[in-house]
Length: 236
Image 1 (cartoon, rainbow, N blue to C red):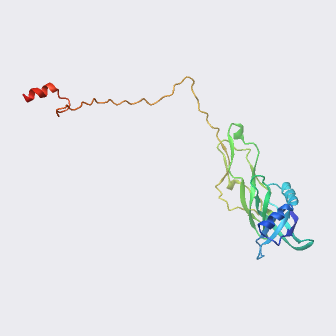
Image 2: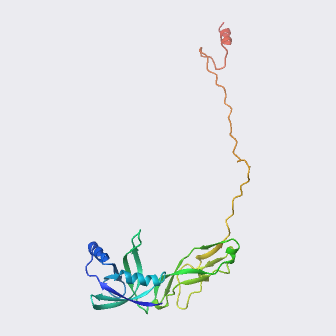
């Protein structure tokens, strides 16, 4: 793992107004925390210097040797890694940096990107490579952090799976991640629905219920359905 020196300036004044002033000067406000120091150190980082370093090491973990300066005076230096970059949502411009102090002789846990290598046999047969786990948290000394973890997939056929337990990590690197977690798999091709031309859609037949005729009661209060003539004959 490459170690990079970066000069940063001490930022004594804090607050939203001061942060805006720092950004107008083309610096990025930041903070350094952790380690044996009791208090975090508030800093500002030259934007162009930082972005140039990160472009050269895109997607990698970088160990910084931060030279904390007060003007031209060097106050202290820290070994540190980036824990968080905050970005403006639209332009993706960096708004704030969080550094964590580390010891080069003590293990830390970091996430390392996973890349696939090769063209799966199953893909050539029509299958689809499904990459499910893109980063793996590993534990190691800072100087042992791998730049990336390569997973060979050229031998995979349709239905084959690579789990975390199948990954061979470099010496001195381990993980506490679920060993049964799936990293990549080759899925079978999706079946297309066959539509028969001219086939009529089958619909459920409409069920018709026979309606019973209702016979209104007679004006003289007889039972429904009785004829008027029959009632007159009964009265005689």
